[in-house]
Image (cartoon, rainbow, N blue to C red; front, side, top):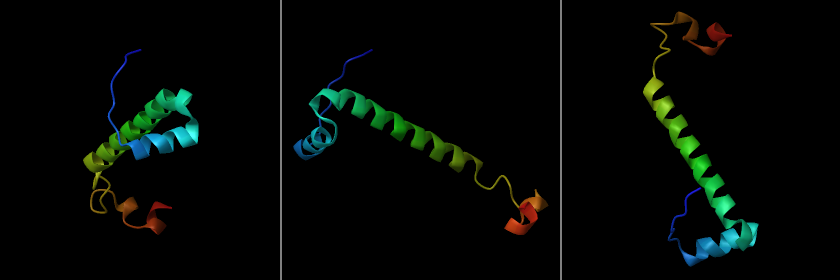
Length: 68
């Protein structure tokens, strides 16, 4: 486990403390960072694979009815 120094606005810190309390800050921030990393990874995969299932290459994907 590593330690780090994080700078954030007083308003954000107060809101975090209001929701989870001071003793749960680290866990909350780690979970929030993990969720953000997962969303970024998903967005990257979606961007990398956009258009792979084109109607021309895969006629079964030409519309919802054909895919069903």
